[in-house]
Image: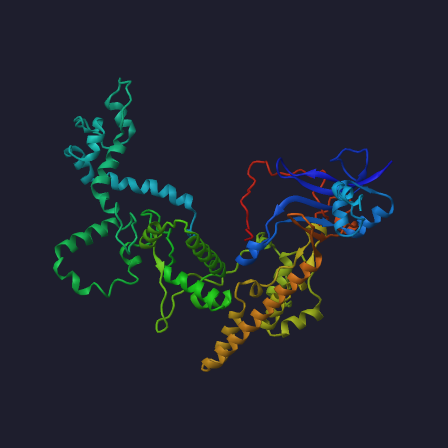
Length: 110
Length: 436
């Protein structure tokens, strides 16, 4: 059976919060996983402790916590990240970034 | 402005404290005679003259006996009618406050008397008006709002000048919060709050938001305030700044037998409260022999080195002696200096300033290091066309963090099998801190 790295949803209505988990592929989304290796908060946060100038320019950010060594281990033993987790893992260079559909299409004629 | 005692008590006191004023003989005399007052015109039921049978108690039961078989709803109780009598008679003095004095019920009689004497001697009033104005707030109105609860003292608030001075010193002159707190006698937390609130006010002014200025002015006129004194005069302390906060660990009373020969200090007491094993004798000798101010400095500058006891989630820091836990430990060293060198004021002040500066620098360094450490843990990633930045924080998943049953609180992620009580009755959801 496949082991996946995926998100499981926590938080109340309208305030999603995800654990990045390693779990059996056929198990329920929110069931107890093999391991929790991080979290992902999809709600954009405002950066704090900035001067007024900086605050005007500042970008909102999304918080991710991740144990990279555990993620690397699970990828090494064949765990398959879901699309969303793939995107997060590719940001820190643990997997090759997947190209978006449109970008792939644009590349073909070249 | 925290009241000194439980406000519940005082609330119950005020309800009973109004009644004696309502039932004084002058008020009841007015009750029978006045028919042209505004309240009687508004409440016609009240204007009926009272029947002749005795009703000395004046409570609701007497009113029921007055009309025993009536089923119609009586608009006003006698208590209520008397209240209006009082409000229109004696109480009218409290309707408008006198700027510069409190508007409390307690001193109503004195106020009435003084008003009467003032009316008599209106001619020679202008002669001595200048001298008695300042600091008269507490004298004229008194600072006890509840007549039957003299323990309740309404404490003074910061005056506008003092407030602006605090902001000026911290933000413009770049003085440390600690130094400003000591100089002006204002708690460090309050100094911080003043700076934040003045900052907010300035922003609101810039944005053109309406401010409740008449309200603020009236409140400042009615409540005792701490004035700002300029150099020749000494600044009056607004509050006690070096109070020791009560620590949770000191709540239980512990019976701890100690042999007479043992040198039992505050350090040991802290260890007993936090259930830490007693220090070995060799280590203890070093602690007691050193200068206490050096020890305190060391502890306050290196909070990470404070010993910890307990296992897992119940791990906590060993309770420090009171000398290290007070808000301004450096004042102890200053006092020691004062006792040691009573004549050398200049040298003492020099030492004091040096110590403050050193402490400030250490604090700055500590904050910088903490920020650096945090930034090292966080990777900021900007996506190409994304609106958002992603901040990756390194965490550790291991046997130590998750614990043997997988429910450790230091491990990342929301936990499984642990109910959240956020919807349960009595859960306080008021945020305790706000990041701006």
